[in-house]
Amino acid sequence: MEPVSTGTDRSGQLDRRALGEAHERLARCYLERQGLRFIAANVACRGGEVDLVMRDAQGWIFVEVRFRRSARYGDAAASVTRRKQRRVINAATHWLLSQQRDLHAEACRFDVVAITGDQISWFPDAFNAGV
Image 1 (tube, rainbow, N blue to C red):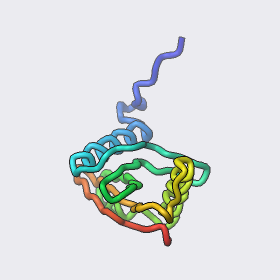
Image 2: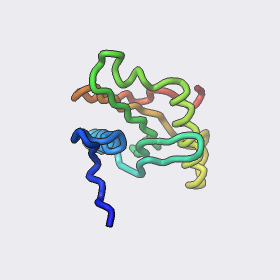
Image 3: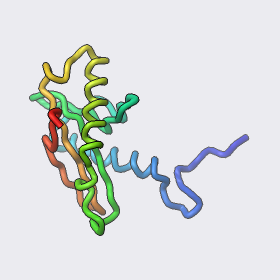
Image 4: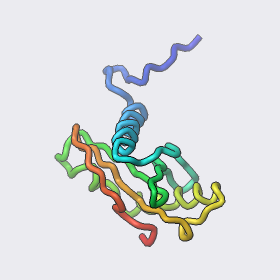
């Protein structure tokens, strides 16, 4: 019988996936404390992924969570490229269609939660579907 993975590599460090999941949970908790309601996580389609789908009184919020250990090569927010934005928008569009909704008919925004070291920054409406 194979041993169950502990989510760490041989050095004892969390592997990339476990580290990403931990930071997504941190971002989710942070946003819930700000009054947002959690809907879904890791919504993926062939052309992209949305880390978190949240709601507030105004509408849908699609969240990209980024993490960097330090700002040595730029903070986490700087890593959200135009290409990444298009992939998030693509996944959000597919998810809304699966819910019988339309990106252009719904109130939606795209936020970024950037975690650099132990500093969390939330950027509401960081980019839009017109990218």
